Image (cartoon, rainbow, N blue to C red):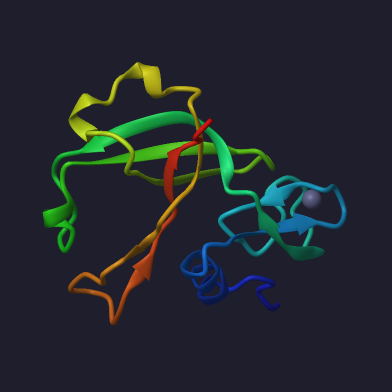
Length: 137
Ligand SMILES: [Zn+2]
């Protein structure tokens, strides 16, 4: 069995400002981050699709004690975002002081913003993570 969207390709997309997911040819469900099979019907009949990167915040947490290698980033905000296409993904939110985050964040529309970070002590170069910002109106 072959991965339709290996993590290496998903990561490359993030570096290039593109959020990639998998669309199921059986039921139409979009899966992101990429998995082996459809998150709805478990079909392997998937194709790579580019997502809008827009969604709304469903949950958040402020990290005060960072994992080893990310100490200089704390405190920082991690948000769970429901994407327009359906899947929920986690990412960082850089648009506000993490210490001031409160329940007002729930439901706020966001989009993927800048997302390449210098590597930490465990990576062999720059790394990309989903990073969100508020949708500007
Ligand atoms: Zn499916």
